[in-house]
Length: 305
Image (cartoon, rainbow, N blue to C red; front, side, top):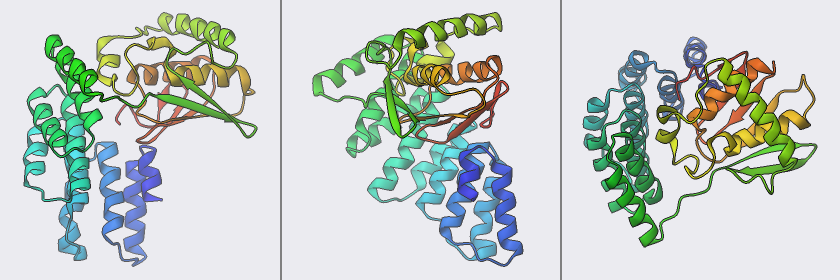
């Protein structure tokens, strides 16, 4: 329950559930604290997270492990405290798989906040360890591009092609009456009810622009290129196609549920908020990290994920 609430961005609820455990004298273990720290990380509760880390040993006799410190690195990185996150990451001794998760977490945060210096170090460690190599190359190239170093970003992409390193294509799917419908970015030709879906999405885009939406802006899209191919038309990203299909296929009043194999695109996240208000419907998107529940123009993640 603690982790489930965290996945929906309900960090406060997670902490309340944890406190209820303590009040009921249910002894927490190391796994419990992974969930609690995960909740703090995904809701920006930095002070609370640091307090929980300190309480592990002092109040509950549990020694923090690399998994717990990785949550702290993630928490600090998400809130822009990159120097602290970096120093902590360097001090942690971890098994190879956990170390890859640690530096992958720091890499994503440094990319998000434009810290190319830290992104370079995190990428180097991942590539040298032969862990998350594809993600390291792509995220680092995006960090360079976001920093205006386009030539370096292009060189990295060329190196990927030369060495045969390929990213996993982003896809989204919807299940209707025991049937799954899968969508890929820009692939309208094989999209179920393709012409109808595209027409609807264009109509919705026009209505969104009337509300101030600027699709494909640099700050919203390019930073997330690794989640959805840049070559794909932004307005036809996989989750957008899945939403269009669901809107023309699922009766009003029924919550639309979409799954995605990678992280949700920031541009699509903005669009989904607006569309939920325009069409007066609820959408739930489960990406690789968490659930996003869109309703009346907002998302449960509060734009923090």
